[in-house]
Length: 74
Image 1: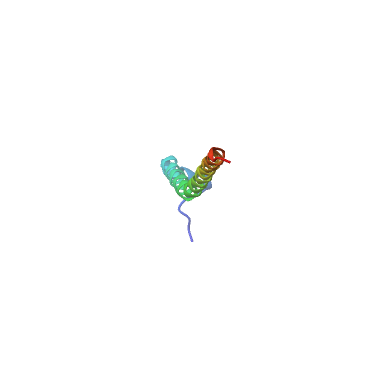
Image 2 (image 1 turned 120 degrees about the horizontal axis):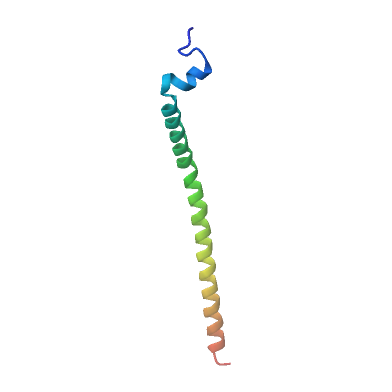
């Protein structure tokens, strides 16, 4: 079996096209990683926002119930 390139340096240089090839590989890898990581980050963000909204709603309900209790005649 014969290899296309004589050395690792020749392989990385790819007859002068190496910089473009490796940048393309890097951009592709970064995009794939972002596509894999973004949904989990977004899910965490949405869970935190939902918890925040639930806390706000509970506080409003507590304030409303306290106001009703103080407004009732004894």
